[in-house]
Length: 188
Image (cartoon, rainbow, N blue to C red):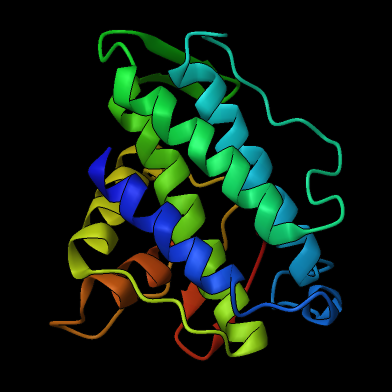
C-alpha cells in the first residue's frame, strides 16, 4: 500500500502541472484525451477506495464525470479518501472483479499499475513531469504480471513490448503494459 500512496502523491505533482487547456490534449490511448485519462484514474482510485473502506467487495468503476470544475481538486479528494481507507483496510478481504478475485494487496496493486501507466500517458501527452521511485515501478510491474498474466485482454492491454536487457523498472512496466518509451501502441 505504501507504493500506492507514493504514486498518488506523484499524481498530485503531475496534475499540478496540467492546465485546464491541457485536458483537451490527445493522448496515445486511442480516443482518449488527457481529461478522459484523468477521469479514468480518479474513477479507478474511487473504485478501489470503496473496496478498501469496506463499502463493497465487488467494486465497479463508475461511469460519470469526476473532474467537475477542477481536475486537481477532484483527484486530491478521491486520493485522500482512498489512502485513508487503505490505511485501515482489512488485508484478508477478497476483491471480486469481473476478471478475477484478488487479495486486498493485489487490488491496491491494480490501482497502482493503472496509475503508473496512465501517469506516463499524461506525461507523454503534455510533457508534465511524472517521477516515481524505482520501487513503485517494480511493485506495479509485480502486480501487473500477477493480474494480467498470459491471458492479456487486448481490449485493455496492448501486446507486451519487450524491454532491453537490464532496463529499469519503469521501462519494464511500461513495456509490459504495451507502452513503448516513445509512445503508446494500443488500448488503454
